[in-house]
Length: 73
Picture (cartoon, rainbow, N blue to C red):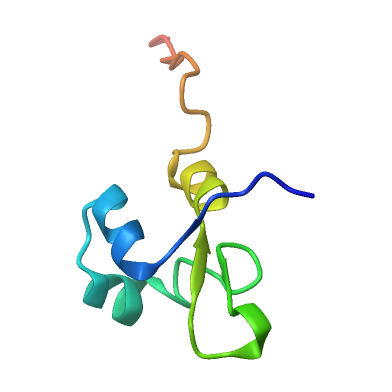
């Protein structure tokens, strides 16, 4: 069984500092994808967000890597 943390819209809004309305109207289905970042348990209307997937995808690509600046010729 997976060790995922499931959050409601309100709980997610408290963690990422966006309003629940912003999550529902702007992030859901544009940034947060069903089956990746959230699911509808038992085929119902309620949505549960998967914290680990959201946290992973919030990080910019290569976060923590050193930035290499090209030298002028």
